[in-house]
Image (cartoon, one colour):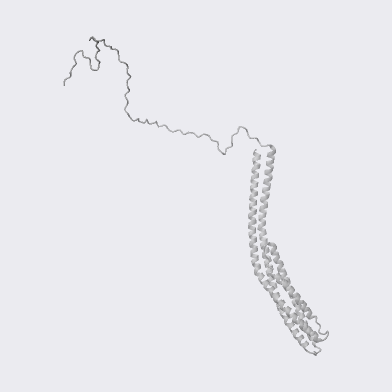
Length: 347
C-alpha cells in the first residue's frame, strides 16, 4: 500500500485554504492565534473507594456526672442552727422521763406475769379443794337421805297402825277403859319416829346447804360458770312438803284420847292418820327427788371443775401474752427515750 504525497504548496487538510481576492490574487493570510479553549477534564474511571482502617485506639471511659444521692442531705451554704438550750433541756427531761416510765412499765409487766402464774396455781388449787369438799358433802348427804327415806317408811307403817287401831275403837260402840291408853301408846311411837325424822332432816339440810355454799364459791372464782341449782330447788320443795307434814303429824299426836268420848277421839285419830299417810307419800317423793339431784350433781361438779380449770389456764396464757406485749412496748419506749437523750447530749 502506497501513501500519496500531496503536491508542494498544497496546504494540509486540517488547515483552511488561503482566501483569494476577486482579481485572482492571493489575500494575505491572517495567522492570528486561535482563541484559548479551556480543556475539558477527563472523567476518572469509577473506582470503588477503599475504607481506610481506623487506628486501634483504646476507648476511654466517659466519667459519669456527679449526681447527688437522694439520701444525701441537700447542701446548703447556710449552717444549721443549733437547738436552743431550752429545747435541749426539754428533750433531755422528756428522754429521762420516758426511760423511767419504760423501766417501771417493764418491771410492772413482769410482776403481773408472775402474778398470773401464781394466780393460776391458786385458782386451780381452790377449784380442786372446793370440788373435793362438795364431793365430801354429797357423800355425807347421800346416806342421810337414805336414812330419812327409811324413817319416813317406818313412820308410815306406825301411822297406818294407829289408823287401824283408831278405826277399830271408833267402830266399837262400847270400848273398854284401857282403849285410851292403847291409843296413847301407838301415838307415842309415831311421835318418837317423827322426832328422829326431824333430826335426820336437819342433818340432810345442813349437808345440802353447805354443798350449795361451796358451789357458790366456785362461781365466784370463775365468773360466768353455771352452778347447778337442782339440789337447791329440790330441797326447797322438800321444805314445803315437810312443813305440810309437820302440821298433819302435830294434829295427830296432840289428840288426847282421854278427853271426851273415846269413840269420837278414835275417829279423829283415824282421820288424822289418813291425812298423815297422804303427806308421808309426798314427803317420800320429795326425799327421793333430792337424792336423785344430789347424785346427778356429783357428775356435773366433776365436769364443771374440769371446765373451770381449762378456763383458768386459757386466761393465764392470754394474760401472760398481753403482759409480755406491754413489756415490749415499754422496752421500745425506753430505747427511744435513750436515743433522744443521746442526741441531745451529742448536740
